[in-house]
Length: 348
Image (cartoon, rainbow, N blue to C red; front, side):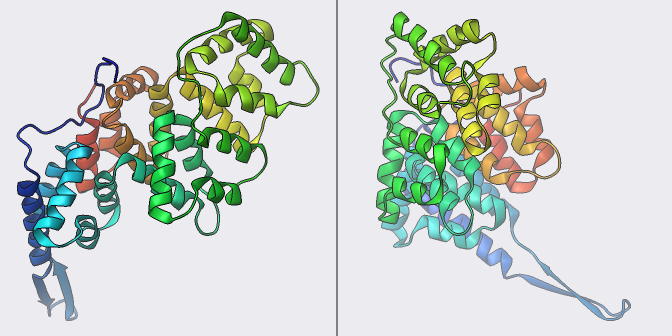
């Protein structure tokens, strides 16, 4: 991308052969199936005749799958899916879903989808059925650039035969809904051109829309934060702080509330630094009891070929521990090993 240094952890495998990889995955899954059929009935008659049934499943085959999938780029995985269908007349994703289970299955299957389809599915899952996963909507729509948004909208239409905007409108309300719709247009200025007068004007307008008056003009926040370029807005935030004598984040916290407040804060965090935004989300997904696995999976996958190295750096700076070690302490098994491959290394 315009001579930018690659900051992901997953790259194209050299000497790539999609057909050979498809065959390797086919054999690895066959191995899992055969392993699971070996049932040992261990009858301990001395212990009140209880029968223990131990299902012996071959671990090395799962390892083969995770090693192969995490050492290929997403574009290469798409070629493997096509080669698998050509060779075996079957759908690779369906077979993976059938053979694998739990969080490991979710992670591997998600890695096989294109970024646009993965985003589309995340949004679809967030709005379908009863209840809405607002945090997923916020994370995805606040952090994607125009091209990613347009690709996701097209993938959603292709996968579900519906418009993503209509589904989000049906499932959300108020200013939260309006800002999501603005972000869904994928029309943020990406020119990088900054007009000093407009910077000053926007800072004044944001101040007038919030801190300066009784009540808040949410429409002004939506228009400015939803459309201006990131470079421009960083300068607006600096100018705003001089006028308001408080940060834009603190103003949002005092002026807005609920999901709308959370969305606007996420947008501001992404404007300041997308990698730091994701470092914070990853930390929150693992700190305390339990793990927000959907968030963890989504971020580790979607940033592995974009800015995982920057996220690791931000994580280390902010939390004084490595992302690698936090994942290691918080997860287990093949799921953990796959996440660590995506993380790509330890920064301790």
